[in-house]
Length: 453
Image 1 (cartoon, rainbow, N blue to C red):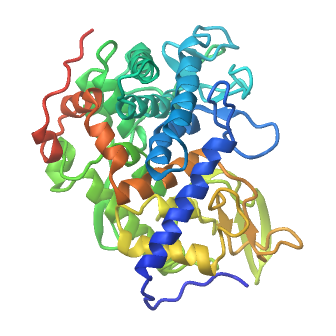
Image 2: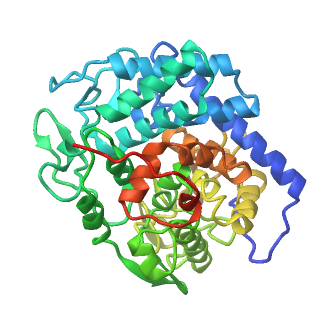
């Protein structure tokens, strides 16, 4: 049976919904316990055989361990041990220009061998994935505040790792920050320009007390933004839904504004709320006529898919993609939806996200028989493999990068835990202030340290 999303509203039972969210959060958190190397703390990028670790997933794990402690998923002692193993690994692992190192200039390679911790697949030294790892370290440093040798070491290592990153080097002489670097070819040609997940990157870079980005880098980045109107919503455009979520996993943008958002009478949290409604409205409109799309069945983002392939279905030739940055409203869109991206929108628009989560769990059965909550993606238009229990394509994998936002955004919606931790981080405050953010919770806090260098 193909999932369908009725156009009439069906109220979600509040108590049942809370139970669903609690179960989804717990099962998703288990990824970081089971798909890990406890000796070095590295987290598997994807549950496919012989796959490497992802430093972004590892950073999300570091931020998720406090949630696990607070929710009783893991003991504080066990979380401290795992966090220390992770931070010690990154601090002591080889840093240098050698092609088999773990990192260079305080940044780290996107993928690392799960056992050795060395660079995998000749991948790039990734500025954004390093950002997520460092943000996780800072979150851990804020949470583990006890007067014990182990927790004091967590705090010291988190600060030392953050201070080692050379953000100015990552600019490669330009105004904006590059995507990364390889020892074979130098800096990548791509830069963080246009509204994207680099909001967190620029804030961490600006807040550094050792190698800070100049304030002009943030101005150069925001100068590349596109403000659009879509389905009646004025908003800062980015196609994939995850872009409107990832920086918000860490930072509470409610009521704080930079110069760009002040000029629009908005803030980045409100912008993500509008983007969430745009994604739902696009699914209801369903301009390409895909199966399943509707008010409770949406969520288009960067994800894997059933392709690359071309199939003729009901007289229509459909082209399906593999892993691409799917987006709304301009595409690419091949009928592939990512249920985790719906859950990660929970704080922005709970009135439409909660019914969609309920639909994904109880009608589309997208959590059934899965070890870690939702699988990465599904496509009701694609028939899937022969004998598939769903009758349509469902990803066989889980990705660590998808699991973390589910755990953390469910928690931010419920308690604001990670937002509170990062509000207390002086480097986050400093980065926001140097980027020109004012108002909201920033008014009530002491200024962060002034970066030097």
